[in-house]
Length: 419
Ligand code: EPU
Image (cartoon, rainbow, N blue to C red; front, top):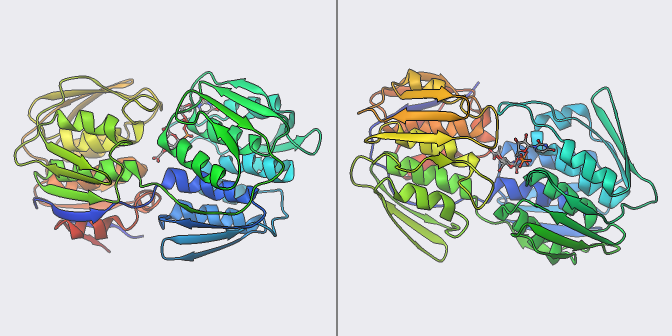
């Protein structure tokens, strides 16, 4: 089992390029199944979740090859309609293949992805939307079999009770080649939804309204291949910015996405850092101890403060001057990293969805276990700003979403080793 060993206390300084976005690479890889031709994806991050998605594509009969950060997917040979339970379990977001398989083959068998590190991950909205689109959905023993009553799904008007990212993606994937028009009300507005729609439009799909709460998709008979560049990863961006801020350092993030990061940057600015952005660059400087964030940090669907950045910002604020208050509104169980931060000396009280963080002078290095992807990244941030040495185990969680995190941190001058 690999682990990260971090010697804290270095001021991070330097310029690094931001990796491509995991949460748009995954649905876009699923979307490539809808094209009967080859697709080339640039800026694809090399992550274990991306490799899981490529194993799913292989299992369905597609060819998938990597060269650096470019992936070529040829789905002209796709023939299978089932994803094994084991592959479904490798990655929770495997469920987004459901919409793509229904769009391409008109049927699929998948598994319930189950609960995970963040609490229960129900898929009720995904399934009820598929039923509205004329799909016969049967659930037996954890397996879900779906079949379009004709050969194709039918366009429908769907109103989500919550703007779920995954449900919005599944509906879009099922709708682009469905018969007729699909309207999604209360759709998720995350930038990754726009990236998926950008890819689908490049393949010929007719979609409008992405980035807003009402998305309209006109079904067309088939999609063609394309070349597409995946957007930068705003959450990896938030992580490296929070990390540098906590270390009182200075960073230039290149290949970044300042507009998409705005909800995070607005909050980070309250800590007293200087932040400037320009096209695809973000510059941050934090010379002194951070200030606590005055306003309550409420995680909300985009354009609210992203739940995926809650843990990494918290890791920076545990040693800020004053008290910061978080309110986690998206997932039930997204404070599991707090135990490790407390072990390192942080003063955090969790009461249901609220976490009260009283800034302390300095964290102490400790041996901790990554609990989940963003929680693990928070521990890296804490380790880098702590006195002494920290060891982080269970780093497979971190590798799901950060491309060689130790290389990015080392490039900024941090003392970190993977052993
Ligand atoms: N929900 C339901 N029923 C459903 C679907 C969702 O109740 O049918 C609930 C969930 O339980 C959760 C909330 O709705 O409480 C939001 O879930 P959503 O469906 O929006 O999340 P997701 O699609 O499962 C994606 C990202 C997550 C990110 C969330 C929220 C991917 C692959 N995953 O998950 O990313 O936290 O949106 O923005 O895109 C991460 O990268 O660390 C990560 C967890």
